[in-house]
Length: 444
Image (cartoon, rainbow, N blue to C red; front, side, top):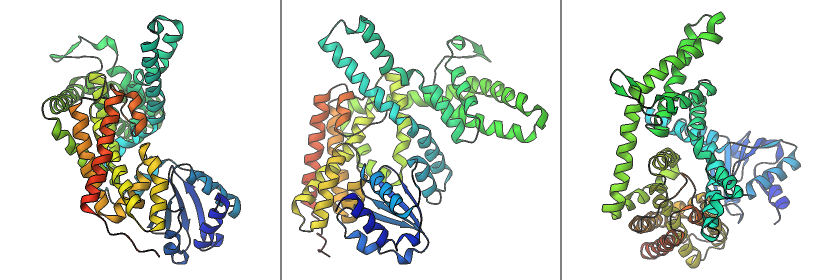
């Protein structure tokens, strides 16, 4: 079937266009709100080869069709039904979907932290790839760094890291209900060179201490303080005094209290990761072992802040390449399923989802193959743990805080070693799946 035929098929099996309320899509899913979910032929849709997975939440039906395909099918459905479709912010949707499931203070904060960094990912990826191009160019053209062109490339490559605290402050204040610009200003103050060496109540200040962690804390608390002040402030004075008091109070609290705390935490995390990598790298595999379960809940986005802080402190992060091996282990397990299954639909799902899985988009494999089958998911985790340990033993580090799949090799300290660890993860996931086996679903 072509995209038009698939769209018509979906509309028919969703109870015809009269049953549809809205059509949205994110990177891998079409999200359809319906009037009556009982009219939807969910089981029939699951049999279609182009459907990689389905989840139903109240009157919202989510069809996993894979990256690229979701936007095309949503556009076709919109044209057929006359219902305007829209591409939605994955972070915002995940936040809403998990509101009840993650209704604990810790999980709510973690989701907010994730929502701070997710909008920055395109810039991380673009600048990270430019770092790879710039450094590869220097190998072949030693005079590149001193040339005007090389200086422009350098400015592009490292631009996002230069302004990262400002962006984080802006997004944090916005996410926690404050004025984004005040969050950006507070981040600028914490990183101002003028504060280095200044003593307040016997505490020596240091620009940038605590990195993005201190910015997150100060901007988040600043947003709450701003809202509290605004409630008490007379309207005629609100525009002038609320921002003034917020910045003044949070500057001193940040310098005296939160920056030292954040600095201690960031130093502890950085030293712990460095110790594990250089002394007991096998333990690094534990981070990979639990990574896919974190992905299932969306909590893995919280690690972006940790990776960003490690880059701020050490220039690289050893944690990201290690955790990325979870996805590679899943590719290996899914490839075994692809070779052994007699189910034509499952084989088709594997065939479509494996290439994007190798590029770091694991959701189609997770929800279409490994999680439904059970044992392959466990094999994925175990295979990833083996690859993660190998990655740590080879001391491979990444230069950006978020990216995965084969393309991350371009932005690591050793692309060859990274690819070796990926191959180990593929093989380990494959072998664990072979040992554990799986129940091949009957053809429906």
